[in-house]
Length: 222
Image (cartoon, rainbow, N blue to C red):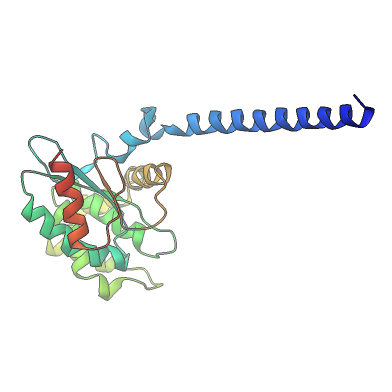
């Protein structure tokens, strides 16, 4: 064996060792990231899709199919998806669980304010009323660079909420933390935009009502 060949083989061995080390490191990182630390539960990524305290808009008795939406209340695409979700909720009432999870996008000036307003309304049993009102009126307040706190207070009054309790809950850091917990779960699951849907823990290819319905039917048929 020539000297040059020995050197070449030695370099190949070093390169292979480095590649093996990098692959091992990546596997360790992937394994660590699969355990989601939100809420201190050490959950896997799949269980981060829906938590025990996640907001269920509709609940199926058998729990066979669960649809989870990570949403931004200021997102126009989410508003466009809203009537489709509502139609499917009506069609599959009692058969499919629908879960709403917050994912406010930082570039939307009022997304976090809207999410915490909905969460504060939830403390008085009015989550769905506030959630719907946000989408029904989004064109009047969304995609703007001014605060719409007063707009959201107006919604709370229209819903007949105890305004003192609403204000206290809205400004409580724990309310923002609750919203942020949802957002962190979304990030851990690879959510990059809204709306993002999961059906039984999987992300189906949904483009319209028909594809959404087909994905649900496929799970019900299993």
